[in-house]
Length: 146
Image 1 (tube, one colour):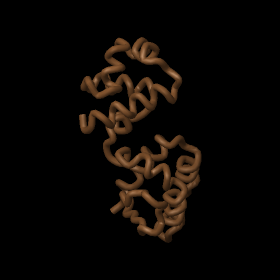
Image 2: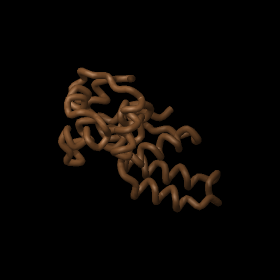
Image 3: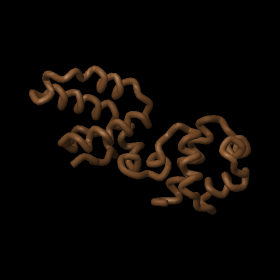
Image 4: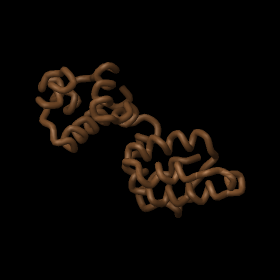
C-alpha cells in the first residue's frame, strides 16, 4: 500500500459520506466492525482483495483509495476544477481539434462527480501535452501537469 494513512482517511471519509456505521460497512463487504475500525485507524494493512471490495462498494477506483496518480492531488484538483475545465476547453478549441466533436468531453468534465472528473482527467493528460501556468491555479493548488 502506497500510504496506509491515506487509505485510512479515504476509507473513513467514504464511510461517513455514505452515512454508514463501521458495522454496516463491514456487513456489506464481509468484514468485521473491528477490521473496519483497524483499517480506519491505520492499525491494520489491507489486502488488494479488500481494497477492491471497498472500491467496488463505494464505486470509486482503487487509485482513489490509495492516492495513486492524480488522486494524490485530489483535493487540489477539485479546488482548481473550474480553471482546469476552462483550460481544457481552450486546449480543445485549438486548430488540431477543430473538426472534433468535443460535446461528450465537455459533458463529462462539467457533469461528472469529482472522482469521475479526476479519473477522466488522468486519462486525458496521458494522451495530450497539457500545461498550466502557476498564475492559472488557485492558491495552494499544486502544479501537476508537465
